[in-house]
Image (cartoon, rainbow, N blue to C red):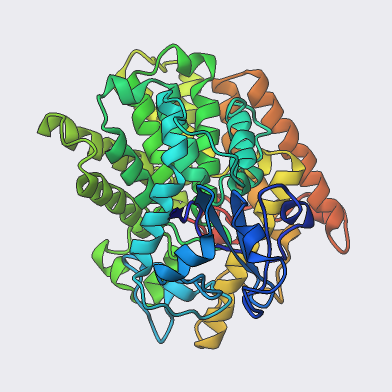
Amino acid sequence: MEVCYQLPVLPLDRPVPKHVLSRRGAISFSSSSSLFGAPDPRQLAQRRGAISYDSSDQTALYIRMLGACVIFKQLFSRDVRVRSQVGFQPDRRGSHPYLGIDFRTLHAHAESTGSIPARRIRRLFSFQRHLLSSRFLRGAPHLNPLHILDEDYCGQAKCMLEKVGSWNFDIFLFDRLTNGNSLVTLTLYLLSHYGLIELFQLDMVKVHRFLVLVQEDYHNHNPYHNAVHAADVTQAMHCYLKEPKLAKSLTSCDILLGLLAAATHDLDHPGVNQPFLIKTNHYLAVLYRNTSVLENHHWRSAVGLLRETELLSHLPAEDRLTMERQLGSLILATDISRQNEYLSKFRTHLDQEDLCLGNASHRHFILQMALKCADICNPCRPWELSKQWSEKVTEEFFHQGDIEKKHKLEVSPLCDSENNSIADVQIGFMTYVVEPLFAEWARFSDTRLSQTMLGHLCLNKASWNAMQPEASGSSEEPESEPEPSSRALPQGSLQS
């Protein structure tokens, strides 16, 4: 019999739902009890799929079992063990401690150890997990259809991808359906959807390996700056690429760069902001001379993965270098400290009505603005999604504030949980950053989507105002400032 660990280890914050355990093809047992207790192992051997679930550590390991035979005899003959503790920390590049602060575990809730290299295991899991999805994208039929546990989840994910252009797309649900692989699955689908794989003659194995490495290099212990955020920005970028003005003007190269920039724009984000890196004299701040520190790191990390996987190695060297520079230009545009610079330039173009999308430099500038909008579009999503993002980003801020307090550093603005609330942070961010940007975007692309985003923004701001302890007229109109400052940039300077 062949045993394939089809899905990655999933740390759960709650027990496996009963409706999952009761499904056909699913079994459950506790690692603390004997494997040879009830149910009868002979009955287990007849099952197609299984869940190994340990209620003591809230960890589930999904296993696909191919063929019907006596599984326990085969498992023990191969000395295969199902361990209840497999929660490992991936080896993060560019993560160095300061004063005992290890960015790799900044947002971790539990310590874990393992004798097998974590990166190797994660890559194996990710590769096996996406064999089925890559076959589906290539249109290859299933040679041996299996009634496996995750078949229904994969089918639901495919149904969601059919509506990937909807502004109400629930990236949290999609991430659950893809078992934490939303960024790989979504980006791979979009590259295929736009015909970029065939047009640029990209090797599917290299494409998949690149996306898996990108997803791994996001710190998923960050409440906000993780692979799900990258997937959400990529989905938003797709929505903007569909807008009439862009759809009829952008070249295939523009679209490829836009999707790659969205997927990698926060690559290897440590979960703390640029001022924190500067005041702690972090090596990245020294390397980039305190200028767009995180954005430069995201760009260089993305270029490193492009070269490591040789994704574009078949293109002429000059074209590769040009694409890498343009990718950097897009990612660097997400630096919120340059918000006024880009917004003023955008406003000037709109006032003078001199934007010509037939001009390559103008198209690139619009791509920069689209990526900026996608990066901070959370307040423009429906309330159910927007609220979740707001809670996550604030949690990340407060984590940073706790670290600063612990090491007797000056607490960064908006990072003090004792003096700030989610409502305060979000209202300031919407007022000084989001509203000005999306108002200008609506002038450029006055479509149904633009109006929908502004409508959600207005409703969400009103909802946060209503949540303030003492809602008053002053809360409706926060202190005016000449330009966005760190006090009102929760998803800007503190995130980027």
